[in-house]
Length: 475
Image (cartoon, rainbow, N blue to C red; front, top):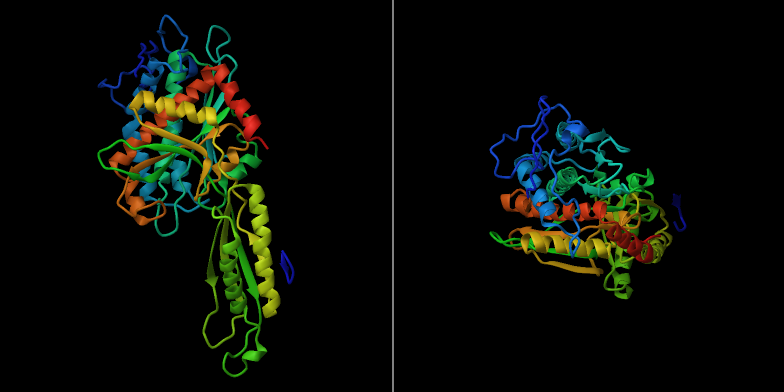
């Protein structure tokens, strides 16, 4: 619009006696086994993938809904694939790709998942998105007979100039590891249901998950989970995790249009678009005094003129507005638009405001899922998880929109980094490449898989998560 007015153990079993070559599966190979980890391209059929031996009791129930054997199987699977996951992480880090251009990452990940026997849909809705699924369906005598569906998300887009400075190479393998581990437990314990990994591009700008939401990608899920690294860990120590909210955000661009003139000979003949941009910037700076301390507004001038002796006839600004709710974001945007309008009126410029992608909703993590994640990490690794879902961090994510579609959880976890090397710095890019960051990520993946298995296996728990969602989040 151009106008002058407003405008996300191994409980081993014997391998199938089938004579055809197949990839060794972690649910049938102890973590200490010398069996080679080399995968073959041939897919394993569902019948071949089933375990030949089961425990006397197939019931995974325990006092807290977790079973030590299932968690051991999850750990075994993650250990089994660790070297492959490390290679994928470093490949993504070595080949940073911006939002909606993650073609190398897309092809590298989907090639690996196809070799592991998953049902892979490449270029799912978006050219650089994908979907990888595994389903088991036992007609009788099985757990999870309701056929529930749990999803994980991977991200793999980079930032301009600083690469994977938000650790998306780790987020990518975090989702892959959770997928592999959940499948291993499903096969080992005959748990019916579906597990799906969604490859979600353009989190750093463009809202890839929102495009997938519009296409109905997540509508059949009983839960969706992912993890995200942050700074603050210490070298040689296990990290910690926290589950909080994040802010809703809208990114947008503003242009002013004026008229050129010689800045010395006849400046009065011009209409200064730079004056309008500066005035709008100053108005918003003063507006902050009346804004709630949780609100964030930040902007830059991308284009301010070409030479100083010509009155600029065009300026371009880019802004981010962040609040604790989508409703509050609407109110803030109205105030900001008034600032831009006022600057146009006082300088004689016309202006244009264009939303730079869809709005990201605030992150609202599901409490039962969050508590289950904390229990898994405590049981497996004695890692503390702070749950404070009503506290909002300053960052934003398009996974927030998923939390308003299905029960969902987005834990953050620490990796070691130097003082000052926070997310979105070149130092964090290097921190996300370290071996310890890799190990910290895989522990979080085990937590995701533990929750995923519980959603599939424990009907009462799945209903609890759904009820909380309906009462606290569902739009």
